[in-house]
Image (cartoon, rainbow, N blue to C red; front, side, top):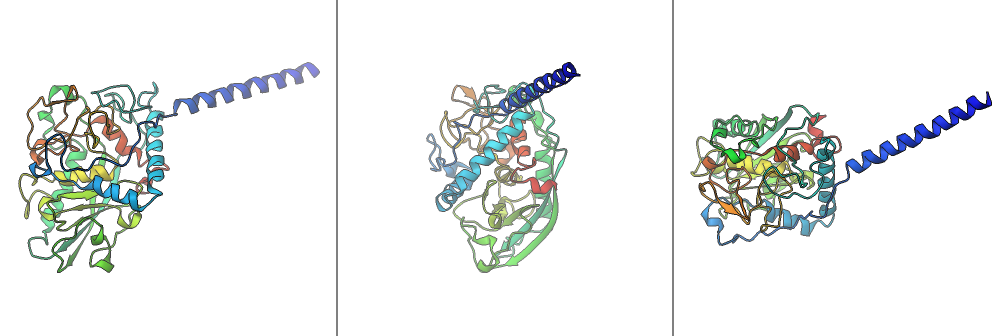
Length: 363
């Protein structure tokens, strides 16, 4: 009996030791490198000799910089979101690819949020996002039609699910990286509000009824888009995950929203909406808003030293690699951008995981 008891004790010790070792291995497998993390970015209109008057003018990073200055706790909040994003992605990769810094080389496996080219089942299924559109107008043109609103929702669904018909134009170098993000958008409601104000700027004043704008609706469970004249040649801007719920969402000028009605070429294909919703879902500009050594935290998007404008020829070479100029997070014309990468897909979807900043949409 005594021998049996000793044997049981020995077995328990060994079993516990194995369990502890397994737990230690599991914890090691989801450790991530945060040494490359940054939030403040270069927001000068002049990047590598190219100026904003050549094309798109997204103000998301400038707004982020201002919010970081005004809210000292935002940096740590975004740091935690980034760390959890990397952990979630790394935990889905049995070989540990994607556990570190984004190298920014095509299909690279030297870290970053987006690993190789093979899609990984993250267990989240198809993600459905309700969308509330708030149209604030000072004239009849800005009071865009329901058809124009619906056209933008259609573009979001096509672009985020790689059904836009343009994927065939992706060069063979990047063709294997074109991602169906399995993210759908459904119009939940349209609010219209007349205003004597002709420009709204970028300080989120259109997001408050007290300022003559429209209050956010269910920010934990829905995407809010304010359509109003921003001014200053700005096409749109978005709030990254981690910001205040009272201002959460996307702002787009009416002439760059959707594909029909009051739209202005060459930004008349709804890709400003796709670009800004990408920011809302935690994507950085593809060039990292810096130079060659600044990354967008996605390993399968090439490094670049700045944005591309117009319809760039392929190949466009920067930082010793070919730019992914057709990516929605560059500044190319609407007709010349038509893909997210698999790494970007992983990054976007990670924020919906349990404990993520947008997990309320899956509850």
